[in-house]
Amino acid sequence: MHHRDNTPCEIQAERVAAAFEDWLREDGEKLIATVDTLGGTEDAAIARSVVASVAQGADALDHLVELRRLRDLIADYVGGSLPAVYREGDRIVECDQDAPHVLDAQICANALNRGIEALQVLKGAMIRRDGEGGQA
Image 1 (cartoon, rainbow, N blue to C red):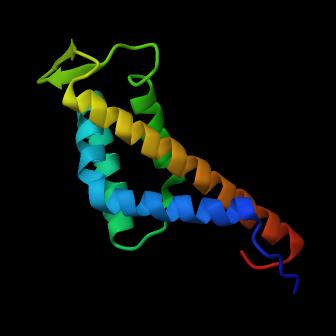
Image 2: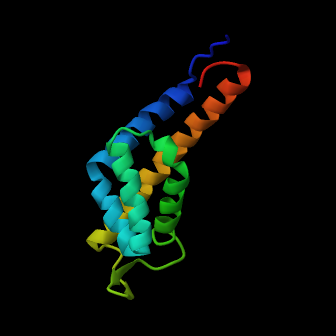
């Protein structure tokens, strides 16, 4: 059996991924509220499911597809081409870039970007290890 030590990049990715999972456990409600504001109940249900799963001990890597969807939703409104908005019932209302929920969306976007980047590094490392005959 071939064993390969983690590279410094992989070690850093493990640290960032662990911090991201901690963030999901501690501030997951902020993500859920942000996604609910921007995407509505269907996207909020996805966020709620991911947050609950990670809180129960699942690996965030198991939710990479959902996390990318949530990141893309938020990215459209944070630093993207669309204005900062919030939902008032069935209406979408443009708002001030410094509004608290816009700042929360920016925090979520940053956390998701860093977390997903780290998870992708770890996923790539597992694929390389599997290809080399080592353990993932």
